[in-house]
Image (cartoon, rainbow, N blue to C red; front, side, top):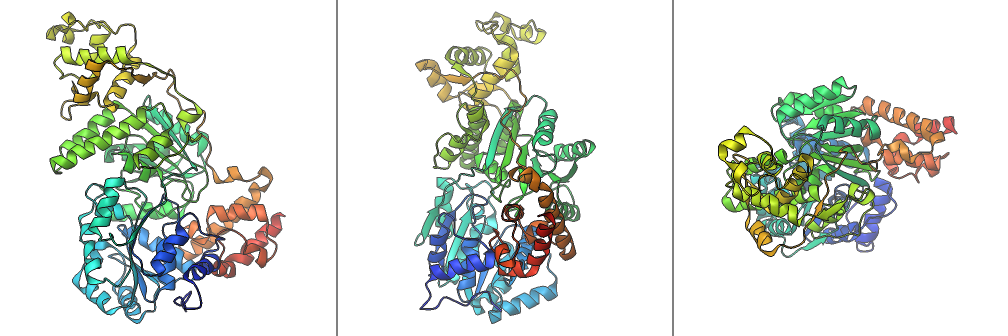
Length: 611
C-alpha cells in the first residue's frame, strides 16, 4: 500500500507533507525552506534548489513523490549510491527501486511494470539509462509525479563535475511539460546556477537558495610539513574510532596512503579509477556497512555518498577548486553532529593542478575559468581571515566570523608584506621570469650556489636583499603572492612570472597584509573530536555502545548499512530520552511508524537493561 494517497481538496499540501514527515520519517518539523519547496512542487511547480550537503534536499523530492499521483523519477549520477538510497526508503515503508546496470533483468522488468501501473513511489535512474529510447517510451505511457535531477551541477560545463549526459536532460521539459522538474545541488556558484536553470529550462520555476553554511564542520588548513605525520596526528587525536575519508591527488599516493594507514593500525581502503569495478564496489560496501573504516580516495570517490556518520574528511593535497573542496568536505557530518575537515597543502600542489588544467582538452575560455577558480582556492589556503567567511562569500553567501575554524580559534599573525612582495617580484623580473620559487629564494637570501653563478644572477640587484628572512618565511610569502595572483606559475616548468595584477602592485606600492610563516606546522589545538559519543554523558556511553551493537546486528542480518536502520543521531537521542514505552520511543528523532514497529521493542529492551 502507498504511504499516502494524493492530496485531496480538503487536505492542504502543507498539512499532508507535515504528516508524512512526522509519521513516515519520524521528524518533528521541516528545516529552512523545505516546507515551501515541497509545497511548491506538490502543486506542480518547477524549482531549482541549492541546499548544503546534509541539509535535507532529498525530502524536497521524496515527499512530493509520495503525495502526487504517479512515480517520482530521480536522476542520479552514481549507480553505487542508488541501492543504498532505495534500501533506506524501503525501511520507511516507501515503495522504491533503482534501474541501472547492476540490477538484474527480472527486477528491472518488475520495476517497469510497477511504473506503468502506478504501483511504485520513487525510481532512481542514471541519466544514461533515462535517455535510452526504450525508457523514454516507457515514461511516455506512465503516470509521472515529478522528475528530480540530483547533483544538478553536473549539467553545467562551468560546474566542477560536468557530465555531458546531464546536458541532454533538457528533453524532459519538451517531452513531459506537465510533470514538475526539481533540480538540486549543494555546490554551485552564481554562473553555474544560471547555467543549470537555463539548461534544464527552469526559467518559469522558482529558485530556492537555502545557503551554504555547515556550522557543524570545523575547518583546518595547514601548510605541508610532513603530510603523513600531520594526517596521523589529526586522526589519532580526534578520530581514532571513526569513519572518515582521506583524499589524494593521484592513484599512486592513494594506494601508498591506504597501505601506510593500515600499518598504523587503522582499517583503510583505497578507491580510485585504476582499481577494478569489483574492488571499488567491495571497498565501498565495506565503507558503508562497517564502522571505523577510512576510505583513501581520489576524487573518483564520493559524490553523493549518503553515509551520515563520516566524522572527518582530510585532504593530503589540494582539490581542484573551492566547489570541489566544499563538496568533498561536505561528506563529513551529514547527520549534523560535530565533524572535522583538514587540508594539508603545498605550492607543488598548485603546480600540478595548473598542469592538469593546461593539458586538458577544455576550451581556452574554460581553462581561464579553472585557473581563476584555483586561484580562489589558494587564496582560501593562505587567508588570515575566517575560512567559512571566504567559502560562503565565494558562493555569494555571508556569515560573521564563525568561531569554528582554525583562523578564528587561533588567529594567525599578519604583517605589512609590501616590501617583501616588491623584493620577490623584482627577483622574478631580474632573473627573467622563468625560475621557480626555490631558485628565487636562493637568490634573495644570497646563497652561494653554482647554478646562480652560472646564470650570473649573483650580480643582480636582488641578490641577497632578502637575507633578513629565512627560507620558510620566503616560501610562505611566495605561496601568498601566487594565491593573490601577483605571480603566476608556468604549468610546464613551474617558473614564476609577474601578472598584470603584480605589475599594478609594483606601480601603486599599496599596503599588503600577509600571513606570517608559522613557526610550528602542527595542527592547531582547536581541531576537536567529532566522535559521536562526545555528545553523550560519560555514564551513558555504555548504553550508546550497546545500541550501536544492536543496530549492527540488525544491519548485518538484512545486509544493509547500519545508518539505514537508524542514524547515530537517533541513538544519541535515545540516550537522552531513555524511552520506556513505544509511545516515548516514537518521540526519538528519526523513528517513524515503520521503524517503530520494526525495531522499537528491540531498542526498548536495551535501554531498560542500562537504566
